[in-house]
Amino acid sequence: MVDLSVNIHQLTMKNPVTTASGTFGYGEEFTDFIDLNRLGGFIVKGTTLKHREGNPYPRMAETPAGMLNAVGLQNKGVDYFIENIYPRIKHYDTHIWVNVSGSTVEEYVAIAEKLNDLEKITAIEVNISCPNVKEGGMAFGTTCPGVKAVVSAVRKVYQKTMIVKLSPNVTNIVEMAKTAEDEGADALSLINTLLGMAIDAKTRRPVLSTITGGLSGPAVKPVALRMVWQVSKAVKVPVIGIGGIMTATDAIEFLLAGATAVQVGTANFIDPQATIKIIEGIEQYLIENKFKSVKDIVGALIV
Image 1 (cartoon, one colour):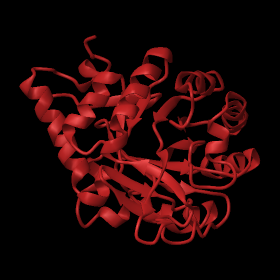
Image 2: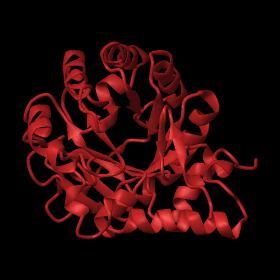
Image 3: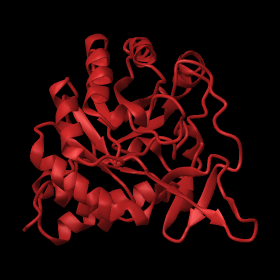
């Protein structure tokens, strides 16, 4: 028997596997395939202050080693989540985190204040890295003043664990990470999608309605691994790794690079049982390599 539990700030997760926001709905969409209680946690889709229709179709496209999306944070707003979704999912015996996004600092603050009182929402993930919205999102996450403005403002009103999701679309990821940590982030999640595009040669038009979108999946994994490794060495708060995690081996590589936990995203679209298989694969790896705890391999990369 090995210990799969990890700690993110003051929260103990039963295992290090969570789901990436925007790839798992509100969790309940996957209950025909997996037992949500087996997850270390799940992160519900990006939530904004008001209802958002998202971007026009088409807003998803397959690429040779991943996918592009430009959903644009389609959701019905935080009040709808509190009144309709939260009562349906709060009974699950795992961590439930809400990904929070806004067009202004004030919107981030207003959402955080509303979520603060929900007992079963043990953390929020402040998304300053979404590349698929015209205002806010990644615009905040690509400069240190932008990171500071959002993180410090949310920190003043949100008393529970605050995770900040970082964008890879920057020249120096470590600077963004250290700024978020300095302003009160309890943990960091990285990476969000890389900005990319796809073209239909037959029509000579972009595939996505927004022309550009966020690239995820195996194609981004080397970039994500590099950034997780760099950031985990530079900050004291836990890092949650995201980016092309399709298998247990992928997840283990992120843990070795310094991630305390991981989020599974694109893999959910291919195999709705991917998260459970990854949990089981991590456990098997620990047994075969005679580790007693998953904590033993966090940051254990040999260089």
